[in-house]
Image (cartoon, rainbow, N blue to C red; front, side, top):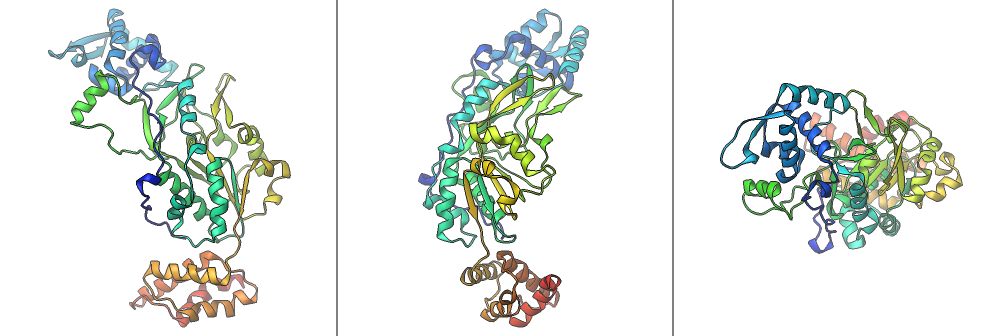
Length: 449
């Protein structure tokens, strides 16, 4: 099945974004200490060279009034010096390291080399997660179906999928290969992206004295819908100097849709420690909080299904997980995501009844009936810009499907794309005939006979 253009959803049917974290007015509101911010300022200047006060605040994603006192402390301690400035004030001063400051910064980098937006406290992250859970989504047929318009589905499929999405629990989609399980799971993700509203994730959080990065530009899609009015420079100054704006340590993203397959292993579900930089990266499933985590081709991972579900037996039930840092300390984090297991294998061959009970929703996808197959075939003809020929489908049933081969929804796409390639190679208009489907099926299906 082919991806479709992003569906257009009426505004009143879309979910709204949760309340944005507000800009902190003090170190206490930011959940940070003066010493912590001072160390991060030293690391930033050490890694990026002399910086203007405004740029330092912007790189830490904190208002300048919060970094002012740590800068003053470092200046009093003769760790930094002012190289210049103008009449705007401290925000325009250019700060550089002294020899003492360079040594202090070097020591800070050995302890932790993280440079970037200041982390938020783990407590703030947990609170924000519970404000934007998937269980709070509005989902009903009118706003779900547009995301599945490119698929041919029976009505009972929507009756099964809708409650599963609203529950925010786990979903098992199973059935023979080639019948749209992955496409259906991706369409649920498309629903999250287009109708689910935005959520906020931090660049990083701090827990048990350790920095853990969360935002991942390779997995998270920024929702850059304008929220500030007026000139861009004015908006920047408001973020740096005023209150009432969004905490810039957080990024507004579309609800994440993270897909993994056979490459998944148990190590990917734990914190990833950077031994040289001494900070952590959040595990892959953790980055899916507030959205969808799809395990495609379940049962063929590098770890066994039993090992994977043993790792998640409590998170699936209790909606929280535990992450462990290098010194053995654990801290609790939300497990707020819709997990979709998609498999070609029989669920009973993968896991026992105790595990199946924890996977709340099971959706079986069977081979298409003749009428559904023809609708899928017609849909793919339209997508490829070719005519629909009944005799082509008649041949496939006479030659293959009535003789033991199980029809697959994907056969329609694969065979018609072969027909398209044949026509293009022969410099003919793209069209469909019985003879062309015979030629295409001979090369595509013959190996299975």
